[in-house]
Image 1 (cartoon, rainbow, N blue to C red):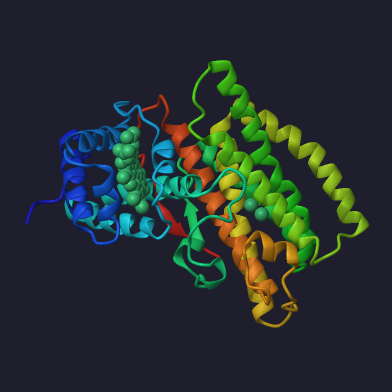
Image 2 (cartoon, rainbow, N blue to C red):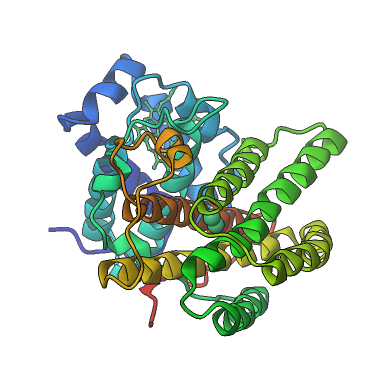
Length: 362
Ligand code: HEM
Ligand SMILES: [Fe+2]
Ligand SMILES: [Fe+2]
């Protein structure tokens, strides 16, 4: 048995990549898609993958491709392939690296995998074509629901502190009126994607550069959040005071977020990542209220049934599960974008780059 590495070097990355893809090629589920795409010589793909991981982990800048586009072109890619890919990757990283470094690789892979999955598996207009386990059949409490990005620097801590402060006010204002809370907060949640998408679009125009698929991802996020609003408006009716709050908050938040994104896009994505962590928590509490019978499990509104392709007899509980799943996806995508921006042009030591995913203490 080889000794595990406690340092990330090019040679160690090469060993990881070669060992991992040897397993992938033999795998009954995901082996075929690789073997049908990479016909014959695996050499160039392995070189690309070593470059990729050395760019991700060592900031070597060796990788110049666009994985989003590559995976979008894989017609037979399915959502259920990702957990297998990650399981094999984790197994390999655990074999070859110390637990801390293995966790750093796996944390990165999970984030990238989330954003690849979110991007590669949707068509241009709707997310309904995502081929995945029906959302309503997802286990109520999967470990992925409680992912927390541990703040690693000042800007993370500012972002987290800001979100926690807003949470405090939201809790004070709404208490357990989850339907009302959802309506007001979804009007806010739908802003960052539109602002970020617009600013990334303008940046791509100014720099005449590829947007790495970010514009569409962000605009899709905005639309998805708006659909959450359209759904909850069928379930609760906002009070006059809440409508006023929406107006005032929009005026302030749109402008503040615009400025933040312009000046500190990494922090802006981190703020959204933390918002979404809180959203996941809130929808989990909403589920608990429904399960305890304190909130009537009414029939799902038709707009939700159409949007998430639900069974015609779906209930509110199914809707909240689907929405929570969306929020978890936005959380991972935004934290992933913040990570990407953090690493651009700023090499950090491998240890600092460790992304801890700890359970939220709540
Ligand atoms: C279900 C999971 C996945 C499948 C089936 C899959 C499949 C593939 C295939 C077939 C290629 C070769 C494409 C080509 O040469 O035309 C490829 C390339 C690549 N994959 Fe994946 N992939 C998966 C997940 C991931 C994940 C999670 C990551 C990153 C963490 C990743 C990173 C890459 C990269 C960087 C390339 C090289 C793209 C380029 O040529 O620039 N893949 N993948
Ligand atoms: Fe939402
Ligand atoms: Fe959200």
